[in-house]
Length: 339
Ligand code: AMP
Ligand code: TRP
Image (cartoon, rainbow, N blue to C red; front, top):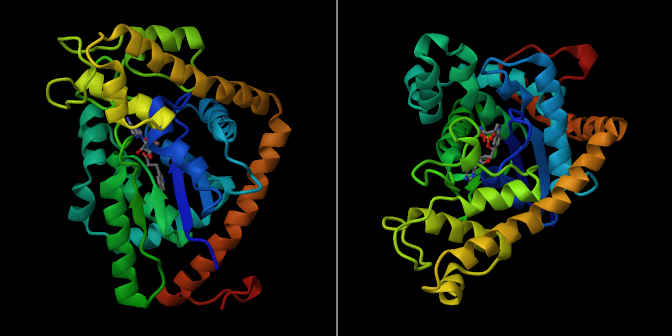
């Protein structure tokens, strides 16, 4: 029996992933390697939709890939690649952009948020079409499932709409993907402001735990995390958003249900609880950081992993794009073996 396929992507826009990225996405990516035919890409094309420094992008792309290997992706069990190594992503994005409504693209909340921050005039057309490129990433690989955090749900809906529209107009071509969102860790909040999500663009350094943070920093940040009045460790999104966030983090890291944690800590105050949360994060992140550093020290190995991933991804992408060109009505290029 063939395994269902997953595809996901992550942007190389920071020097480290954070706890939200890890619990919302990366941890699921690792878990899905054996049950699924898994494709994971570092989306450097998406990373240039905001102003960037070329050398920094190159470095962060390698750091991103190294962290994914550090977190447990195994190049023998999944296909790990860099988006720009497979030109079909950009090619399919163009075709899909021609069946996307302007109003439809204008309704994407991530675009509205990001463009509001810099002022509408400062946003590029690339930022506007970002979700269409994401749809291309997914549809190219005929992915059945897409493991992402809650904030990506709308982009997944757009992807399905575009896939369906293309199939309807040009004949069955694309598989329509489902979002695969971990219920417990769909949205990890900022440690200093539990009303907002943990995010590299909006969180303060104290509100965010980086995957590559040293244990001392992790302990300090969790000790200083905003908690709520009272002393009871109980999940209550309205009255205790800070404690609820920490419960969610602890539960997602250890696999212990939140109800069991509530029983364990009860009304004994926040101190012991926070300490244990910090140790759970340290225990998970330390081996990942060490492995990431090892991978980064051997750039030739890393680049070779990415080249072989791009080779495998490219085969699938070329096959899909071949069908798309044919369906859309482009003349086949004979010296390329187009049909
Ligand atoms: P990004 O850093 O925006 O490329 O996000 C990478 C992945 O992490 C996506 O699947 C996001 O949905 C997920 N993610 C980002 N922030 C959070 C968060 N605070 N909680 C849960 N998942 C998140
Ligand atoms: N937009 C996603 C994010 O911000 C990143 C992404 C790009 C992605 N292409 C993708 C996620 C394809 C899943 C599938 O997190």
